Image (tube, rainbow, N blue to C red):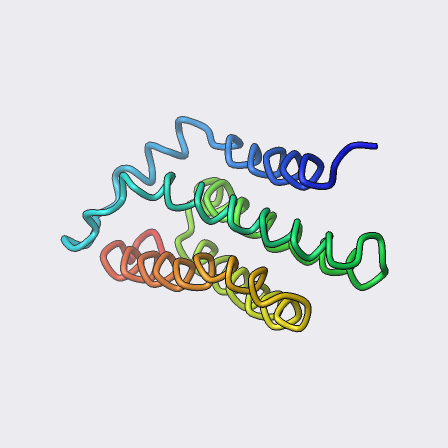
Length: 157
């Protein structure tokens, strides 16, 4: 039997590969957008998301281990997967459609889904809920940044 932490880590990793659905043409559009002067942390964003995904996977592992295989646990795993898919879709979908509004909307949907997940997980494990805190803190920052990009680039909203 494969340990649950390997399966959860593999699922997280493979969903994360969806971020590679970006074409050079899409990146060029995004690179040409005007940015707010305070956006100095942009090079750190991949590292921030790496920490967030690892924390989310650790949270899922804790929840799974509390009651492996139960219907509630499977439903929570599905919610973890949904949150990750929404999160990973943010960049490729926004770039493909060249729409900051789509990115902002996905960010908001991801945040709301993660709040629901965190509230459900809190009933099972405080530590698992705490591990979702990086996502819950960072996602509004990313969504706000996208909103600011919309303000600076109204033609690309």
